[in-house]
Length: 87
Image (cartoon, rainbow, N blue to C red; front, side, top):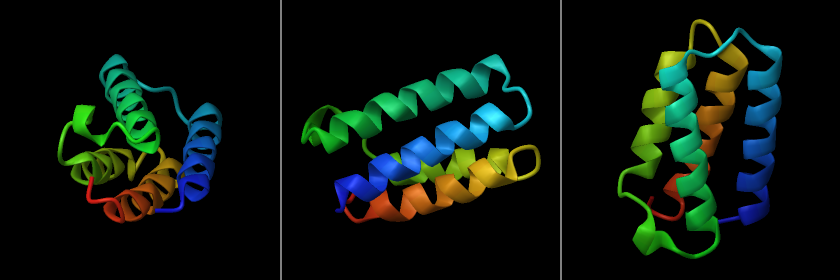
């Protein structure tokens, strides 16, 4: 996995979310948890990361599709990158 690509995708996601529609509390919590798990995976602590990380990214992407299309696209890209580590 290219860690730099994942980090860049995370930064693009943050920028897309900052410029889009407001987020509800549940989505904020889901994104915070996802961000923490991705950071753990990047640090090599995959054992502490819940399995199915790629699937979680894809599920959130679907929820974002209508109100946050740019963020949804970045999440799909992130899912593809994470799939490379089997997350």
